[in-house]
Image (cartoon, rainbow, N blue to C red):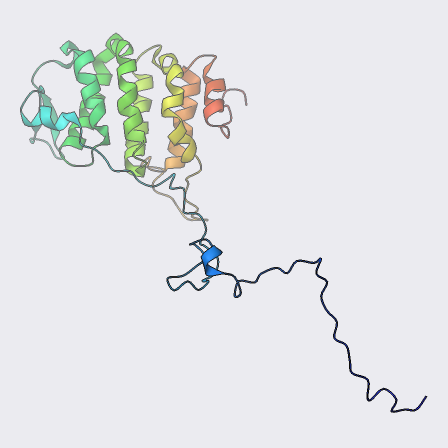
Length: 253
């Protein structure tokens, strides 16, 4: 065959098969048929939508004012601040063991979520004084303390959560059977502890002084759960494990 025989032959371009659908590109997409997250203000495609927002499980919630403020400001509570010692001290107008615990103890527990002084100081010191001499008067009041404890924990404020955990430890140690009385209420007070269970400081070979002051939230939660298990009876561990799956027993090891 002659070497130039194919010069006059016109090439026939290949055509795509009609059975294969053509996928639209982002540039050729119809703005009217696109979702508003993909179209800009002028109707032109602007890319893919952003990812989902953060869940905010550890976000600090707003703290509502407690009823303690109103009672204290109008003088309904039998306490006052004694300024004769460094740091201040509570002066009780009546003997603490003669107080009506059903009325006053829930009021003092309700104010542990406060961060403003002097209400915070009065709450912490008042609760400690009442738990020290309460004895058998504390146990019947435990169901009324669950809502204030849950409200304080749900603020998700690390400072308030640490304060609440210390008060819960003092509550468990204040009398017999109190740890067992708290077991039915684990579903109300343990979910927040499960969120902050692993909140520890990674300081390497440094020294974390918050452990000495009991301000390390992860260690404080572990200590509180161990106290619950120790004083909560035979059903305490299974209920703690149900709400805090990563908790390991301190009595079985």
